Length: 327
Image 1 (tube, one colour):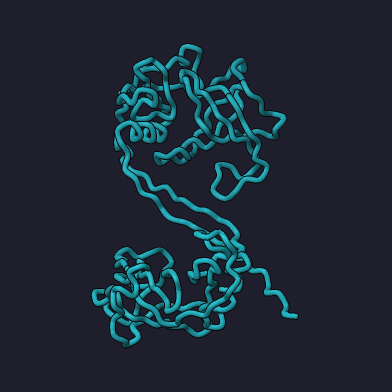
Image 2 (tube, one colour; image 1 turned 30 degrees about the vertical axis):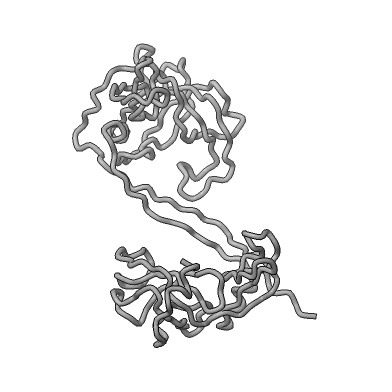
């Protein structure tokens, strides 16, 4: 009896910086946070929205009437977070809360620093704890903290007269005009039966797909089932190793942690015998000489578990009719 292949598991991180410019409302909001000023925006119907938006979510009317809100507010709902993750506002257990700032009609999502879930309740009064260093981001609010209206020491909270939203022109020195948001997703990937076998074969420098018993299409990489016919694919078929470039793109922006000089070419490659194209980098040829129909072969590095790139095989270009269905 053949032993079952080991179960493969690998950590996978998807991470990229997202750069965006800010319109006048968002610019004023983030610059205000840097200056310890919380801003909302008033709609034509008189409702005050926070965080402020540039267009009324009900009427789509343009909104520009900014108002200053108190740094105090009321918890409208909450959830306890017993195990903070990397990059979250606090590194000790805390509550995620929706806080309706005094003077606003909507709530702001942030963290509440509390000793335990028993100390949190809907309707409790809280106030902003400002970050020691502020740069014009939502993290300028370090968190919210419990606040007793009757403790006689309001600090930044202000008195009852300060609870009403006050008009604000949104003008600050050196306004924030753009932000970079770092998106990251950490997870553990576990391939199924088909892709586990595919990865083991690649480590042996073999490219093996699976054929659908109904439509006969050979899937590379295999998926375990045919998405068109809805049946399992168990007939294993070795394809390639050579193939044909069907489409490609020229990459001009260097990716972080990728030791490849730009420009370079990334292509869809239809391996001989496969029913669809996979993607791979093209090397061994100037980027401006890569073309549709180019015949290529894999290049393996010492100890590599998959082809490092594909290079021209030296064969004549494939006729368009032989790969047009794989574009």
